[in-house]
Length: 627
Image 1: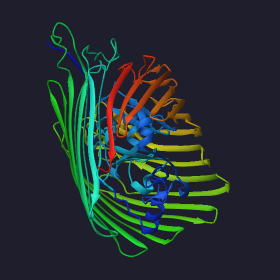
Image 2: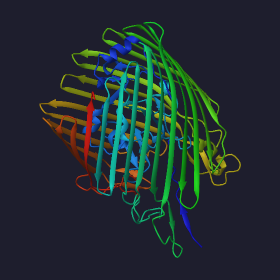
Image 3: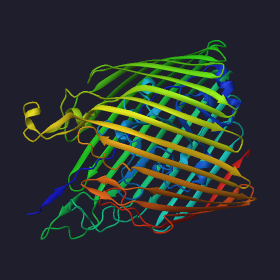
Image 4: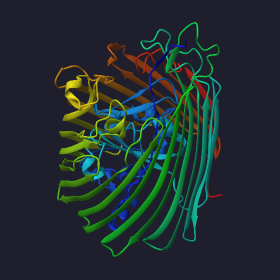
């Protein structure tokens, strides 16, 4: 008889929509400011970074290309206050933790669109390709007062490319060891009121085994756990006069990945280890939006979306998890003056799932948002308030109050206090033998204070934060504390956490060199047991240097991560060195090379999991505008 030990892993990404709008004055301010200095995430409307009280960072396309990062989670974990975990190498399940919060407490958006699994409640960043990303906005700290559920740690907004101006054709193709290959092609532009954007991307690799031999769970399979990922996006719009635009877009992705999840013991072990466990994830999103300016003070935006996610996971027995989301958002912005802005919005979300493992009712959520930002001389003020009504759990009211002040040339200080929450997932509520339909949302209260300095060649930022999280959802092992019918325990609001730390970042331009530094100290503990939370490093440092001279660009990044507890052991600290080089041999053409984990450091991103080790890439890139 075949003996099987199962360890369930499900990868699922699902997309919904949030709307952003801004009055003409705000757009004019944004257009007059370099793109890397404009953000939307901290206010739900375009604003210069210097006018925002929240802790916001913008990573533009130039920084993305100079980073030599192989994935979004690899790129983001180099920022202060952000840590990532991945169950193996590229293409494996990956999550992002901001300021010590869990992956399910970090909200990820694409173009303002909420994404993530409706069953797991978190976003698998492995499903998103870096090739389609124009820039990434990060807001560290509570975000529920603007965006609703699942923003205890912060919010990440991934901005894709859109058409503007003369035709813009770009693409690349690259290859590396482990039979790896990647490429993308994109065309965008605008003419006579019409704008358009088309992009396709693909990546594939054989990889290595995701799990190490002799692992705790006995799920090691010696075959390679590779993946393939393909994406397609189409977007178009028409502006018949200034301030009036209607647009439609489509995004689709396909992810195929292998993972180790069971042990087939002798004498009935698998004769061929290659038929490993697989995830098959297909996502599709269609959106329709209209933006209209009513007057010089008022701008409205309406957006509706329909999306599906289809996931199949397993080996001999395939489990299916399908999600359907429908969302509608109406937002209006009143620019009372150049110094004062008021934003109001209604968000409606309806989501349902189909699973081969269980049935669950659909649920809907209505959110009402009111936000104010203003400047009074050298002082800045931000106040946000949101009320959420959900059919599956109690109503939630969240708020944030922030104050800032310019104290000297280039120097400013700020302070923020806010509340946030994480919603129970479909698994938390309905999974057989575990889910409890009466679970409450996780809740948090946080405060932070920071200082910033900005000059022509230098920028510095430091933030100290303190966050208490209550009603954490976890496994309740005592059946006596569960509803009837749970003999082996159930889901419950079982724990409390304390997340406190200091984040520092700096950038210095010196001649042809640019230096960046990020330092992070974190104390993330269970308030009841005083134990460090799993997979959180007490400190993490990133140092990068980039050099540019004529057609040449060289860069290197060192990432050091301290010890982390995981599944009863303390994972060793590690440091990674990544190198990259680019040579532009013609106006639109360049050769690129990158070497990741250049020293071949053997480390565990999570207990018993391993990365691919040293990996090199070399490729050809075309980047031309005005065809």
